[in-house]
Structures are given as structure tokens and as C-alpha cells.
Length: 133
Image 1 (cartoon, one colour):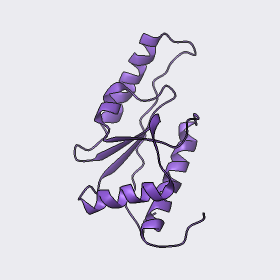
Image 2 (cartoon, one colour):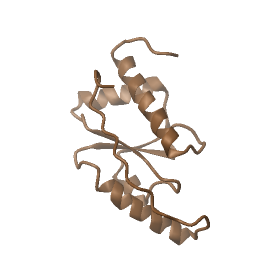
Image 3 (cartoon, helix red, strand yellow):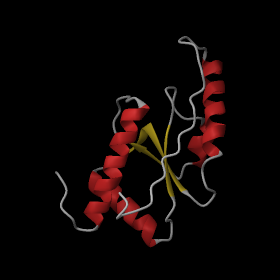
């Protein structure tokens, strides 16, 4: 990725939680994780939250989004992947947009790999370089 951009992968620890939780307990856990996430986001970053309810885009549409952000001076883009319970309301409110890769749920480690691959693909698309279709 280094020929295209400087990428930092920043992870915050998941909040420990029992298997069965009430709605209130789930929100409390997401809020704690959300505080840690928000503490890592630069104030001038364009935030794209990965969320099932987000907008689905093709690889070309994601490439276009990243190209437009760069064109208009938004060189810091933060993609946020939530924990097993999802993202807190405060993180979703901070997000400039929500992106969905699927209506399915993926482990966040796998989602991280898919996201990095799509960012790489977007840079190749924007440079007119070949990429696997």
C-alpha cells in the first residue's frame, strides 16, 4: 500500500462481555468501546463507519469516494470497524458516512482484511492500473 498512501491500523481492545446481555448492557459496552474509538480519531478526519445499515458501494464507487475526498482536501480518512456488538451511537454520529460491505456479519479481523484489500483496489482503480475483476 505504501506507493499509494500511508496506512495506520489502530486497534482498540474489545470490552469483555458475557454471552448473554440485556439491551442496556449491550449499549453500555458499545459506549465504552466507542469512547476508545473516538479517542483515536483525528478531529480533521473524514470518518467512514462500517455498518450493516450503511450504503453498499461497488469497488469503483468506493474508489470515486476516496478520489473525491482527496480532491477536496480530505486526506485523512478513518475507516471504523466495530466490535462484535457493533458501533456506539456516538461513533455513528461522528461518522461522515456509513458503508456496508454486506448485510452479513463478519468477524472484525476478516473485515479488516477485506477493507484493506478494497482500499488497495480503489487506489489502483483511481490510477488506471489493472486490478482483478
